[in-house]
Image 1 (cartoon, rainbow, N blue to C red):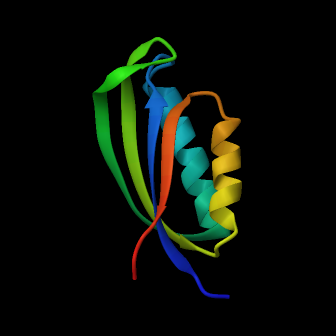
Image 2 (cartoon, one colour; image 1 turned 90 degrees about the horizontal axis):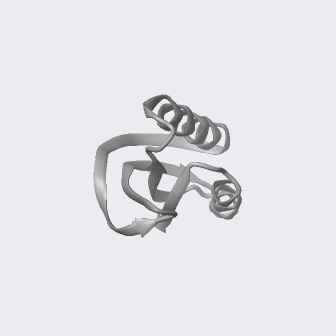
Image 3 (tube, rainbow, N blue to C red; image 1 turned 60 degrees about the vertical axis):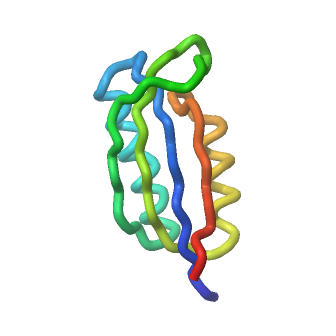
Length: 96
């Protein structure tokens, strides 16, 4: 089974504080580590959103690079969608 490279950009809610952001980031990096190979994790920090999402004007941006099989990104997206505190996410397959 060949591993593919992916990148995910996640925007976390800052309404619950920095501890909640760190907990969510740890949750998703652990999930990725269990199902693939975790690469670089880059925090872009708290930034103003282009438009309000769920009445929030700021979000904490994190970019995670990882490698996994082709089935895992769909499962990761499903878990993200049912997790409170994630405002937006985007998973992109990176070119070889």
